Amino acid sequence: MQWRNEGSAFYFCAKILERAGGVCYNYSMKITQILSSKDTALSFEVFPPKTGEAFAGVVAAVDKIAALAPDFMSVTYGAGGGTSEYSAAIAEHMKNDLGVTPLAHLSCISSDKADVLEKLTRLKNSGIENVLALRGDIPRNFAGNLDYKYAYQLVAQIKEWGCFCIGGACYPEGHPESPTLFADIENLKIKVDAGCDFLTSQMFFDNDAFYSFLSKIRDAGIYVPVIAGIMPVTNGRQIKRMMSLSGGTLPARFRRIIDRFGDNPAAMTQAGIAYATEQIIDLYANGIRAVHVYSMNKPEVAAAIRANLSDIV
Image (cartoon, rainbow, N blue to C red):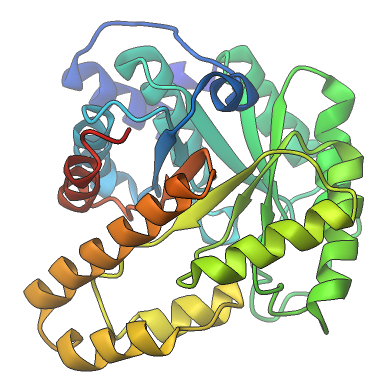
């Protein structure tokens, strides 16, 4: 194992986790098992640090969010895959030290098949059963990838192993690179047919758009579970960039909230949590059984959402 090499980032992360303490639970479930067994599931997302020096701070945030007893937690892959080794370390910490089922993101646009195989081997050897298969954002000055161009190619490779529960991303208002929502749903069907067991949506702020999207993909023959992705907005200035990445739009009602409170961080945080809570309650009330909160390494935001749903989830 690369943990044993004192010169590696793996070793550095392992020593921090060792100092953090904890009991080795080795507990995990497949996401599809969780979704089939829960009427209302709630999960949170964290992202890895960019540097080893920031690893301990991220672990502290992960520990606080895990204490909220989510049904699972996901950890992103890092921009361009540059922090992927920290992603794996955090996923292992979730499973082995915190007793939380991890969902490890894996993107392929900056990787070749050998690199992907190495990462899948590590996850498999660590007993991590859930992978969210993504293409990833295309880096600047990117020359192209001979092994992967689309996420469905990564899904198919993971499926060959036969031991992972595979998730994929979906865009309720269409992928920003897709010419139409119809074309995007056609591509989504290819990805699901390649082996996706469930889907997680990008953030959206209009629940009616999500319900319409569900109806359209069911009509297209996509029947896997879909987890609704919700972002509690705490920074009004960042939301435009986020929406450009997700391909979504801001309803007029939410735009007014951002215009009114966007320059006041405390007020925007409170309003953003309230809006997200309202979305989640409406989703559950309309039969959506699973919600994934993009908590952005903010335990206080995750805790506020959890408290607002204390008698619901």
